[in-house]
Length: 438
Image (cartoon, rainbow, N blue to C red; front, side):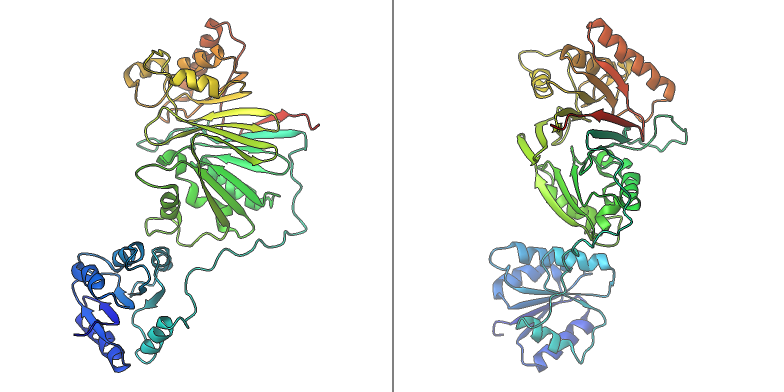
């Protein structure tokens, strides 16, 4: 046959033949392919103007075909219509994220099908792609005043645990949520990691109608205990907010792919696209001036996967955030991580560091990416950190075991004759720092 203008890919003979006949009657040259596995090769062979593909097919799905078309430089200009009997909004979101030009619901209207196809082919059809987030609405007049004073910075721990392999029913005075910490000024909020602790934080931000129109979220990495709460962070689903998400790229998955899978894929636990304006920033080892009074410096952590440590300078308050980092404690000529971390975190007012293991457990679990509490405390004392906060606590430890870890940390500081104060993170606990506003 002559080169087709439209290729229909559908393994259902009745629907496929109906689509072909309707389009042929309207004057188009149409090729029907009922085996999705050969579809892309035929598309590249004939280079049609449009591909109309069902989603659910054995071998390779219509979304896979769409992705192949739109990511291949030779075929990316071919228009793609995805046809599906699945009416889930998330399926439409996925189709548009993969580059589809239109999403057509089955069963489609045979009387308007050809007209719809022609309007899309000629560029007359209105785009179905998700609309950009709505502009932030005007704040209500009854917004509550921000409780943070101009000369204060409030640091709050919203989650401090790792994620257990089995959920425990035992209560803990320290809390059970996974990692999330915030820094608040009278104008801004900066959040570090999105473990389960971010869920209640998000509800609080929205419920209190706080002034934070812009939210900065810094991800150390994307292991489950650091990112599990991200889809449930309520400001993401509120058009009043702009959210800036910064984090590392990993060779296995880019930052963009990770965020997309959290919000737009069928594997996402949520069923609606974000309404807030979201910006993504890939972060490397470098220094970044986020705002005039807020700077971030980063380095890669001694931990599996691409993991960042953040050093935040906020109005002169210096905080090192290293939730997943293994301090060796026995540096050699072949290993300079401890030395690099010391230079990086020098001058910290608060050194927040991985303290996953007590000393006896670390003897068995060394060199796996998490620190011993005493080694971390000793490091803080040697490098004259003002405060050392035990963080990323083993989720299987009881309160009694955690109490003993704090005592071990204090003993390690005393042995070094240091002045470092040891703090044990408590969920929901606020730490208020006074600053000079000159």
